[in-house]
Length: 333
Image 1 (cartoon, rainbow, N blue to C red):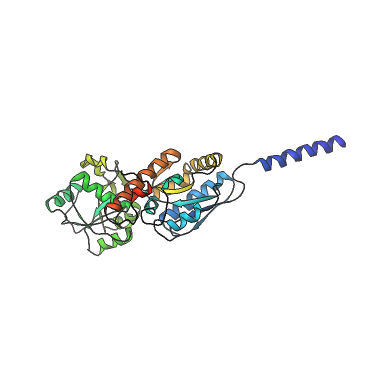
Image 2: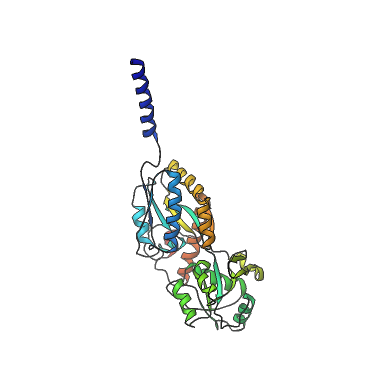
């Protein structure tokens, strides 16, 4: 009886010790998405968070904290939480503009990033134009510099940077008309206000299928197969010089404070890598025309550093920034 009691106590102690010895995470995690519910960044974060939860053994609850500039309200909220890995920040490449817009007082290297991916940009025209190929459009733009109106969201946005890259790589010059977002840019094309639009394939897909826009080229090195449309060629094929400026891709995912414990970040990386390799993520990406990235650590930081430099200095040169990037220590691209 005594031996049995001692044995039970030993087993109980082992179980209890094991439970308390469990490392990160011991409780649910919160992912603070800086953009509104239902948007691309929100949807992406909800999917990756749900998949990661299966491997972490706790819930990853997604909430939205919008407002400010460049997602500054949500970023500030998440950054003020303890650096323990229990608060993530769901963000996108657009957040790198928060500093030069006056909503964020630090460089973006205070975060460690987990990049799920993004949808590549496509340059399209309205069906009433005579341009059947990218070469047709570029040659027409060269003959009439700034004579063709083009929209690509707001000045300094990723879509605007892609349009600028097309100009630099091809020698064409368009008359850029800024709008507040991708949807207004595309609506402007529908209304006949502009002839050319640069936004993501995910955003354009319904208009392309409905014949409202005609795709000319993908602004990535590879062609892209789109169900019901066939293959959209790469702009690089006709204009190899674009490789000096492109691709400038979306980087949607989440971040954790860079000063979080190393072992905590290791657990998050492991769960992220497993989650992004699941069939659910791959199917979602294919159906929504996303290219999965999976970058973490130094590789992800390098990508966001490059985006921050490119976006910040482009906005400053366009006189659309409030803060000099140099004052924030952001190097020129």
